[in-house]
Length: 250
Image (cartoon, rainbow, N blue to C red; front, side, top):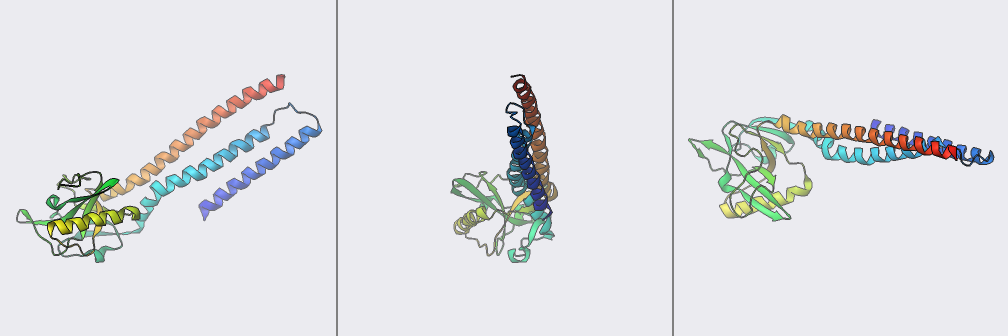
């Protein structure tokens, strides 16, 4: 509400500026000062452009970068999760999951589903006595886009080859979840395994750092937007001063 209120106040300032521009125009018409420069219209137009760009690009930056960061912060985090003893239904509200140190990716049972992009999955399992243990239900899966061939067990998404990686950042994209689920169904059929309630994660060593990437990207584009608009505004003022100075000499 605070954000929308500030945007509304900005719009009121733009409308007020437009009102001053119209009043100034009528004043100049009455005084027959047709060729006099009118800075009110310049102020109104540049304020309007700034407001529109701020709403459109700011909203795009928020939904692309800041909203995922806030979503991860609001979801629960779980520690020492054992894929052999826990089920997907127990972690429905999990955003950041830290598995036990014996957790590994079972790259031999990875799978890919192709639909424009290739949706890659690999089961998260447990290592015991130097080998990967079979699970009653494979409910935890590492995922990625375009990082497998789709017709062989060659999963190489995220930090798949990092022995210190034991954590997952939850997949939040609803538009991708169905395709990853289809990849899991293919893996179930090909490897004769069961996934009762699969949950999907981006495999990494440091979930906190991965989550903060979204926030840092949001701040970065916010600063880039401010600096770019400052440069554009400076150029506009320079051109307007030159144009109005020439207009005043005619």
